[in-house]
View 1 (cartoon, rainbow, N blue to C red):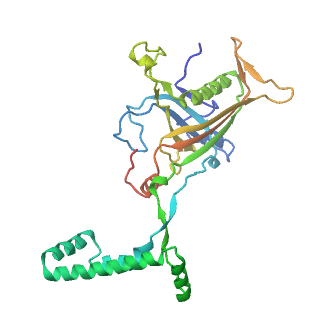
View 2 (view 1 turned 60 degrees about the horizontal axis):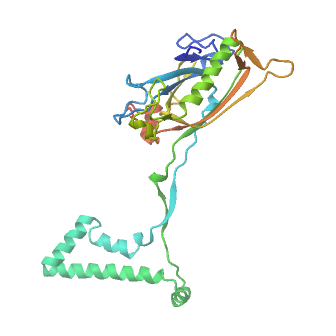
View 3 (view 1 turned 90 degrees about the vertical axis):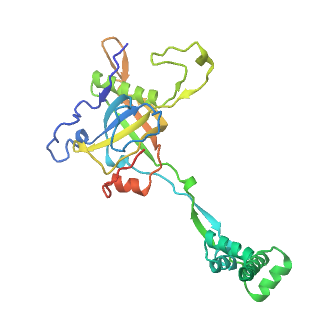
Length: 315
């Protein structure tokens, strides 16, 4: 059985924490990389700052991989719905305005109408205005031939007051897609690529609830408790020029789609590297993954992540 590395760096020339390499973009790929951490799902809701990894997080694997800025194409949807406000700006609304326009003022009017003579007159007047507004709205909106004929004769149409209403429940989580073509130069790098592939495949999946950390299946009451534990989250931090790059920051992500493919080295080229024990590793591995954040971003989040605000956001 091969040793399980906690940290994998590909290619090996990437040196996290090392000073920038001099040169006119020649070695950019060695200084522009992602730190990807696979983290166990938290079992509490206390929250933590977006730029911190709390000590209580269990990090199963840390991977460093090169990237290019075009990797980061943000995709998210905002949900708006066409809604007819109808009488919001018609006699119904006007009647409410004359009574003060607030719930409390309307309640006060009703109370006075029930206790004083003048209040009763005011209430009757307001109710009459309200009733007239309601009757006009109902008549204008009626789907009958006489009403259609009358509206045509007068030359008026019912105004539904349509508006685009923001629907917070329909807002989508932000997603990003990242693709790598990993081509190791020797058998040692080929082993690391194999481990990277295995990490994405392994930690993107859930685990059976009745299996402990050593892989032993519980034969007691959990044996029939058919449930899953959550897959790992991904914490991603970009580095540009060997330093943290905070223009592109992410909340914890989960893998929602993953494609892994292998290919050979071309005509007259080997398709596999072989180690001393006879294990074979592909000379090219392609990883395509779609990641989705686990928190919906708000304006405050963007202001903090881009440095416009010093107030940290929590997740």
